[in-house]
Each structure stands twice: as structure tokens, then as C-alpha cells.
Image (tube, rainbow, N blue to C red):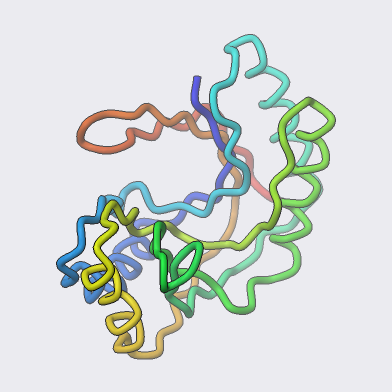
Amino acid sequence: MRLFYCFELPQEVRAQLYEIARPLRQAEARVTWVRPENFHVTLKFLGEVEPSAVDALKALGAQIAAKFPKSEITFDTVGAFPDLRRPRVLWIGSQQAPQVLFDLQASLERELTKMGFEAERHFAPHVTVGRVKDEHTARVGQFARLISQIAPFACHAQITHITLMESQLSPSGAIYTPVATWELT
């Protein structure tokens, strides 16, 4: 099973983020655009996991959710990983995400490392909106200009639960199925 932990977003927030990203879709570069129903904030990508490990991952999700309060994140910036000169992932993120989200992710990370999962280098709360498949400098260079033209925005989302999500890859994009969901306190 291909699994990850995430914050799911309400439908109205996903719709707002899709509209915010609309100018990016004008680029001539080859991009695989994420469908809005798949927008989420990844806490930890686990990769391929044996089905026998799912019960332990569920127990961990319940343990972590019980320790952290509900929160709110404000999406207010657009960017690219690794950077705008070589964009591979186009995202919408938060310049001032609440500390509780970082604390929750760090706690999850510590426990998963104890279980043998590789540690992440850096957590940056964001929603992936597209994956750039183009290497052509001129086409890829359009993203810096398009991002600079996006008007300032603030899209607020309540973070009320964490989800252990299964990701099945298909030719039409990933299909996400919740394995388990836990309410934050």
C-alpha cells in the first residue's frame, strides 16, 4: 500500500485554491495538474508500506491526534520546489503557518522514525497544485512571471483532523482513499 498522513481540506477551500492557481495553468509548459478534489497538506509521505504495518500506523495517528488542538492555516503564497528557476512542484502555501502544525508534524516524524521510516529534511505546509514535466527553459520560465501576477490573497482553512491516506497511481492521476481519520482535540 502506498500511504501518507495529511490534513484534508474542506471542499470550499479546495475550490478557492483551484481558482488562485488558475493563472498558472496559462503556461505553455507541460504540467500534470492536481485535481482540486486531491488538494491536501501532506504531513508525511510513507511510500510503499506492508499491509501488516497499517494497524500500528492507525494507532500512531490516533495517538498524535489526541495530543494536538484544531487550528487554522492561512494560505497566502504561491511558489515552486526546488525554486522558480527549476520548478518541479507548483504549490500554494502559508508564510506564517501556526506553530501547532509544525509541532504536530515533528511529533509524527519522531514516532515514524522510531518505526523505521526515513526522516524528512524540512516540513513546509503547502498544497501541491501541479507537477512540472517540462525541461524547456523558456516554457518553465513563465512560472515566475505568472506567480508574480497573482494578486495578494488569504485563503483560510480549518485544520480539524489528520488522515492516513492511501494513494493509488493511475494514468488519469492519483486516486486517494482515506484509510483512517482522527479528529484533533
